[in-house]
Image: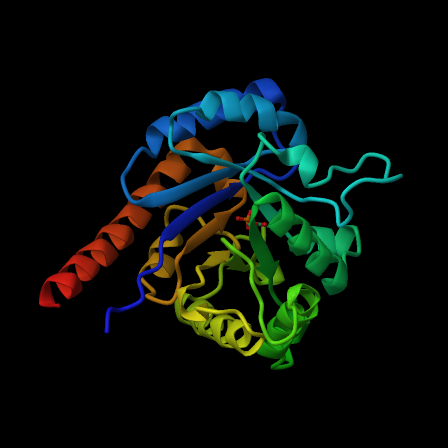
Length: 272
Ligand code: PGA
């Protein structure tokens, strides 16, 4: 049997940083500094910079993602942005980031609705899950993450089946985000296996090929540990994604992982 080969994805979450003018310049510089084969690159700027970043990235092979989407398609929701509005501006969308769970009190049910909106509009969702420090200390990290997946994915499931084309899950322990305290590679890899198992249990066909990224204080230094783990398929990068050199280092390391996976696939195909 052919081994499952998952893509390697590096996604940049710029959060509430950059103006449209800065964003276009930064995106172009990152695209140039990360032009390596086999790694899927995604830049997620603020909404107001999506158009400028899209223009700056045209022809570069770097995809554009939104940082959020509203749970409804249209309606009286002042200041919000819906999935149909993102058509032509983004092909990916971060959903359920822990900062939104915390600050906008997003629930798993709303996050599930957002996944539905992504599916309707053909956006590839990056679903973020992760435990808080006290949950890890109480030995509830896995239960928390599985609960988040269940809460969101049950909204999407129709009967026993769950279809979410292009889904990527980002495991982002809350205590590691923006703190400089990254998780251990082995712990994140173990959680990635838990995530695939839970998604399979929830009816996701082909859960073994679900890409799982790690996020939380990823830098060109910490990325090495995560990208060496066969269960992890890349990173969702916050603070370091605003620095061209950091992104260059992270994507260069990701390219080694992607090349090794590519060689393994070729060898398996040749072995028949
Ligand atoms: P960080 O953020 O890399 O700055 O820790 C990651 C994220 O919030 O996606």
